[in-house]
Image 1 (cartoon, helix red, strand yellow):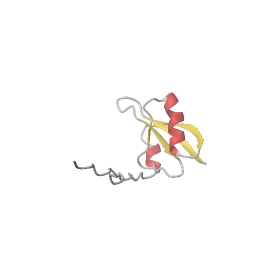
Image 2: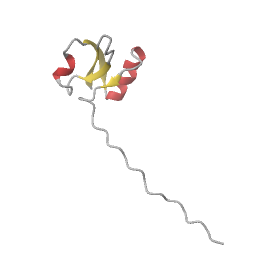
Image 3: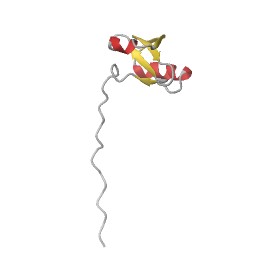
Image 4: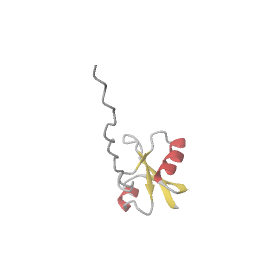
Length: 84
């Protein structure tokens, strides 16, 4: 399990990001952000769900989120239409 934190900036930025402490670069925790320990979770999805209970607009950190590969759409399997 990984340790997750929420870092939030005061307005005008008002950004709330969820960070994995083991994978996130140190610069994400600096620069005037207030950091709050969120808990131990199996993945970012679980941590985001808990963070969004308190911060509705929380998002995953782009620096420490795993790269998500888009699955390509399967080829069309439509059957040929009968000709009259």
